[in-house]
Image (cartoon, rainbow, N blue to C red; front, side, top):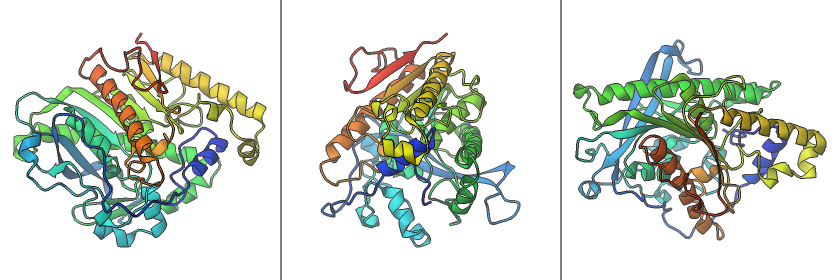
Length: 435
């Protein structure tokens, strides 16, 4: 998985800047166990996993010829917090001891940076119970699809997923094999990141963008398939899903990070069952979060882009890259400004043309907010004095995440997206109205 985690950017100069931003930082070994922010909602959190095989699609990256596409899906759902409190918490990275011997040390470092992995005993305790009963009642919950960034198992988003579930959502988190550090199936088959394929494809002209586009198409199809299967489980008594008859099939969203954010946008394009989509910090080499299609094709549903580093076209840092970065990319500042202006125009035109309305939430003004601030990776970084900023940044992002889906799935028109006072004055919200 080496050299895969740079932010997905629009030009080589920005890719170079992203790589330098993710330099390994040493962490203090003082804490025995890492901790995560506690969920802020009223519900507890349950989780159940499914290995799903799509018989319609082949898996060319499998070492077994003629294999079909197989994914792991983790359904996180609300429970009664008091009822499940006595249960043993689920592990942060289930069966990670079985996986560790198969991973290179550099891959383990990259999976956790900027924090440092200090053994499975140091991993945080979750607020999740495996296979617990869903919260009592008959009311259905909105459902959200989630896709990880390149290399990140979905478990590295535990704080984010726990929190949104605690506010009354069901989350269907998809592990996309060969695009994450590892995917472990119940039969103990292990799919590792497709490093050889990544290296081969990205060495070709425009190879990084072309390979990303290919994987986004696949991830979008994974999401569509996962949604179909989980709705089937939710409507079939004999399958004994804890969320049986508790999914609101008319309140479905998708929120995803990094390359997964591009997959969320793609999911809205190909699946009309999805009512709203969110991209956590990613765009393509044209300044567009809709990497698969021409610039005049977006989505009809409401859309939100978190603008931090990978998806950033607007901050002073982006507008003013260093002379060294420009020289490394063999680009003059004048050429760069022309390119940047073109990408800004592309994004503005696309967002203004989305019928359901769109939002751009710019968080690059918050100190320490980086591409990985949507994951647990910064929350687990106890080096220096960063922890306070890291937790605050996480809380700000969560507030806007919940506001977006509360507004467009639950019909709440009194959210922080609608407020004239941002929850942090350094966070900027731009809204493009429905039309």
